[in-house]
Image (cartoon, helix red, strand yellow):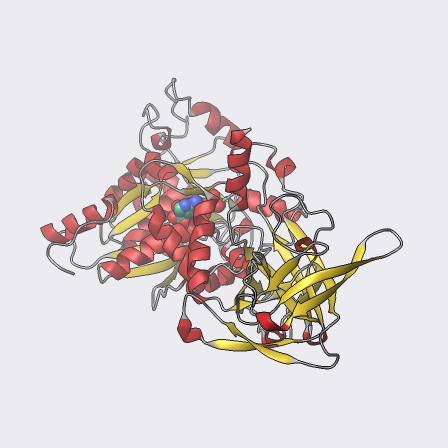
Length: 560
Ligand code: ATP
Ligand code: MG
């Protein structure tokens, strides 16, 4: 790190200053998920920030499971979280921790608070506690149990642990200030009785510590220097500091808050995502439509694109919503550089080229990625029967239509110019086949007589085509801010998934492995589904369209 390093944001400025003054020499951060659901794109922001700071300043970042609420937590979630952090490209090394592993120490610190007259066992019911707490405009009242003796508190707390009292009948509270303007300081609950099996500690405990007590102590036990969290914890910071000041922990981490990442057209809340899954709106935590990391991975978003996105979003002190288009832009930019091009016909229409010899096959040369000549070229078989996209033909073309129509010409990508001579229909009048001719003198661009052929369409040789299912994904919600409305479920986009069963891919795609990504020319970026795709039964997901059709739709609406 150079002396003159410029901070990229206010957190880096704090860290740089701490290094300069010698307050810290080694930076330690942590990412502290609760294993009560899958990580989402908002968590990616926090992961990139915490692990990114550690990388930048030559420090460490711990992965710590904030697992003190047994009822909603599970091994499945914890394992999924580890997988996702790794997938994003970060490594916690030796630094894997669990708040549950501190239960004994946390208990000891609670006893220390009691001994110092800083905590007491309260027999009020949860409702009474709420009532006594007061409101933002009214001070709270002290519990009648607040002035129990240290001995009585120690005895009761020990018996809470021993399981002598029913769930919810007693709590341990910090003795701070019932008149504090900050509600979090009005004798917050530190421990509650809850008989529930914990995924790590089983039935060893029937009392569980609260987040506000657990978090600062966990940070201190791990030597965290900068405990970075989202803005909703700003009002908890005085309590964070109070806990650290009043127990004999080995060090004093600093809590710093930043704005959470919100994305338009989707939701970033585990609770709300869980509802979407439980009520069947999506198939699961890894449904490619949900913004979980498991979902976007399956969709085909790359870790590189997500890290780039988090970088561009930056670190702010004020909450805001980032446009989904920006994330999609990052995905396109990354895939544009790296995705091999391929031809895929999603809604096939058969074309017979009448003047092309039966049984003849030609190998046409195609460029794998115009952005990267190093990716080379490949051969595309061409023959008398091909598939084109249904929408690349119109019997009665509107003005400006440059593709195929009766009597008109179009160029086949990397191939010849063909002309539509005849249209075959079924008894319902649907176009089922085109009869065309080709001009042998048009291979490789241009026409012998200089006539203009403006449209270029993609195609696949019928005899060589590889069948596939293609799943077209679109935004999950039809409104920009589903996270802000109560009935967000009624705004689920009914067209967020369209399944096409009869797609035709160029033969080179037969070897596509799950997870391989391509640009299907003119269609967008696609990847072979990591769950359902297998050789011989290919399934592709549309990761993102080539252009932002939502922005164009909005522009059109604004013009009206
Ligand atoms: P959710 O509201 O989705 O349940 P959470 O904050 O309860 O999220 P945690 O598992 O507690 O989930 O989060 C782990 C860390 O990720 C926390 O430090 C939290 O501040 C951070 N985080 C969660 N959501 C976001 C977000 N949208 N943007 C940035 N950081 C986030
Ligand atoms: Mg949380």
